[in-house]
Image 1 (cartoon, rainbow, N blue to C red):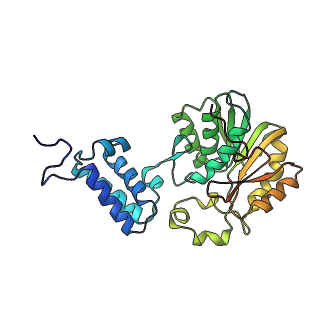
Image 2: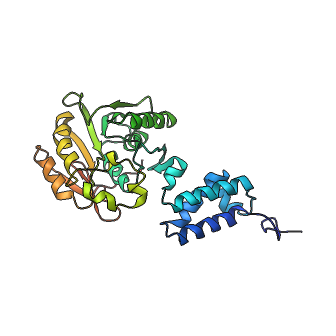
Image 3: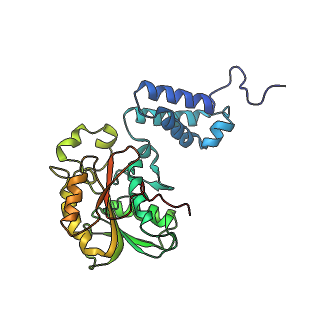
Amino acid sequence: MTDPITPKSGDGPTLLTVWKGAQARLKTGKIDSPSIDARLLVEAATGATRMDILTDPYRAVTPDQSATLDAYVERRLRREPVSRILGRKGFWKIMLNVTPDVLSPRPDTETLIDVAVLAHTKNEAFTVADLGTGSGAILLAILAERPAATGVGTDISFEAIAVARDNAAELELDNRATFLRTEWATGFGDGSFDLVVSNPPYIPSADIPGLDPEVRDHDPHLALDGGPDGLEAYRQLAPEIARVLKPGGVFAVEIGWDQGPQVKALFEAQGFTGVKVVKDLGDRDRVVTNGPDPRVNPIPQD
């Protein structure tokens, strides 16, 4: 009897062979994380899951699926991010639609969620504003963790607002999330929110041409360009956040790895106390906040 998991001689491509082939091509093309990227592309092209690749590695791959995978790999070799190829990106514990109109969410930004979810307990009702929401990633991740919270995301891009609304609907969070086209917190009353978060553009204008092609050529420059010194958005945000945050409320903003002292000073100049710089898992400055530091106060297991 033939071993059911052993391919017979002359068989066509399988999940295992196409995954290894895609991985080899990406590695030769000097693509970061070739194994992970290849797996994600194989899953998308074949409809297989990660578990399928592990438990049914010799499942046949059709010619159409192979052609789709080849096209995906070619795009990745041209330095198009996997999230752009597939139109989807995982962030925190949620899956989001992403388009060329929004920043593709990055793992570094999850440090901001670490801070935000510590500001309130799981079943506590509170209001949150996400200024410059893009895909809605930050707001929706917070609402997914805190079921009694409600929030609003703002953006100046009509297209970004449309993406965020679609993501909220797919995650069934549209009953607690509202998205508005406005600049930062324009139009909100004083003391409106318990928590205010933002991942603003913070890359100095002159640094953008030197970014990796995945970022430079595929993320909207509106979401990247922080002005000559990278701090322009924070100069606008600090007084606005001070205005719309309730007394005793918490703010948290993402920063570039070398901007901690400057951004901290901008918020302290608005009267905030207890402002601190929180590091990400790579031990780089990542968030400025007046809230808890997750390294000092770990997130409780709910």
